[in-house]
Image (cartoon, rainbow, N blue to C red; front, side, top):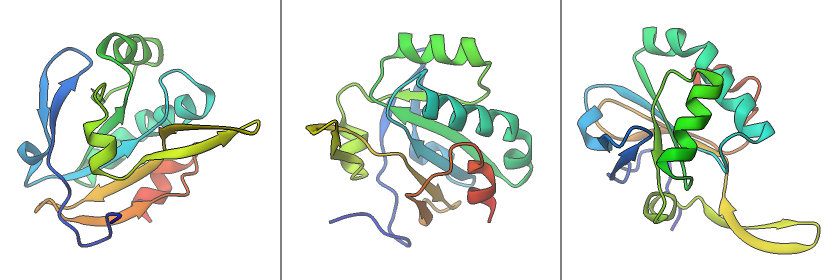
Length: 149
């Protein structure tokens, strides 16, 4: 069953771009913008990450911690962060456990070929770890406005 608003966000522990351990439940007491994206350094993912980077102060002032998740490894995340000066952690979900827990590992289709990949979905999580908003029609160049709306 798909996650819904008012569900408890599934906890996870994984590594970020620098090999540091990130556990979602350690952010209790803060609001979290947990955004899933298909791949580092691709056009849509770059626009989305840069929009969040450029507005990270606004999000932090509103009490949010931004965390990105993709199935790319730590090395790819480090390159992506350095190239675009991203100012929030990216979690490496190489075993796909987080994308599966959140229901964003989905069948996709491109040029008639079917394959599995990460859906671009953002979960806004409150201080108690409860999902308050799910954005599944992400506007990559105006994502902060969607989060704050």
